[in-house]
Image (cartoon, rainbow, N blue to C red):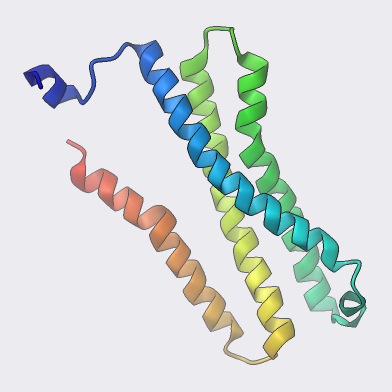
Amino acid sequence: MTERERRTGRDETADERADRMWGELLQEVRVAQMGVQILFGFLLTVVFTPKYDTLDGTEQTIYIVTVVLGAAATGALIGPVSLHRLVSGRRIKPQAVTWASRLTFVGLILLLAVMAASLLLILRVATHDGYVPWLVTGVVVWYLLCWFVLPLWTRRRYTE
């Protein structure tokens, strides 16, 4: 490895870097897309079950908010695919990578909200106990640690 490779990480052009980053981003989005699409699909079926009519007003509101958040998360996480398709061949891949990355980040935040709202709804229906908000808060803190705090700490700690 040359001194330059040690300093800069890779010896690649801006286009090569954009190609590499695009490929990495697509792999990341595939994982998140699958999860949000499965969750959203299950959420859509709840309203057609007999149990839905027995939910109180608060639980129905939580459900509606959760479905809307799921739709928004799905849109944000599928957005990079549409972006790529519509700008492909225009020689603006670095800008496309930037915007796709932003959409993915927004999608992850929305996915966090969907997961929290889904968990809140399920635990409220399943238990009706006062500890539900504490459980949901604990899971949200865990997601924040895994999805944002650890990556940001790693970036800050190991980036020169």
